[in-house]
Image 1 (cartoon, chains in turn yellow, orange):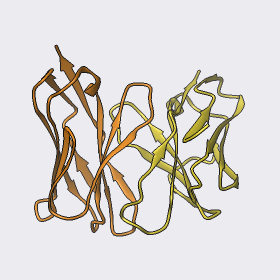
Image 2: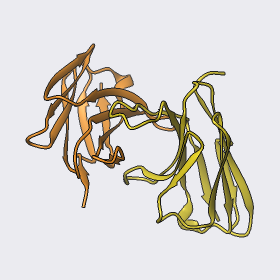
Image 3: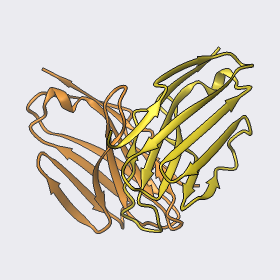
Image 4: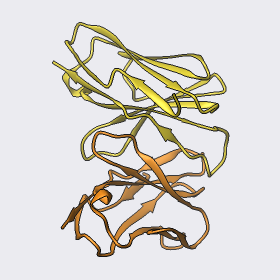
Length: 115
Length: 109
């Protein structure tokens, strides 16, 4: 496979469940990202892993926990979520580095519904 | 605060031309991006502007005026497959991407 692959594409979970989203990139990129996309709202950056260093948005609740075991794989662990966490979760990768032309390659997203 | 403004929705006719505007107020500027996102699919990169002027890429062109904090995406010879959301994003002085909420473009026959 090429590009950025996310699984599962759809997930329905209760507020007491624990689940994980998985992302894999086959582009040789050095940075990986988790974004939250809600209807009619800007993309919200949740976490960045760049050269194995984690950068996070301080407003992200602790019920979201990222894991990046290597430069090709990224996970988002979910526990005790709230209905307002229902959204499309997008993974992306890029070459990284402090460059203006840092183009992101996105996965198709995981559509999460919290009941 | 930092802000990106773009219209929520636009409608255009197949074969016509449409211009999607994006205005921004950010802490510094290191480039402006346009992405296309079809419903249920991944956003895909369309263009990157860092200098003033027009960048043309086939049927799509992107314009930037840094002094006005303004960009537009111009789509010519519209096709039904151009129906999608178009996302504007600016990279600020800390190399963080600031995103607009996206413009949903509807193409009618």
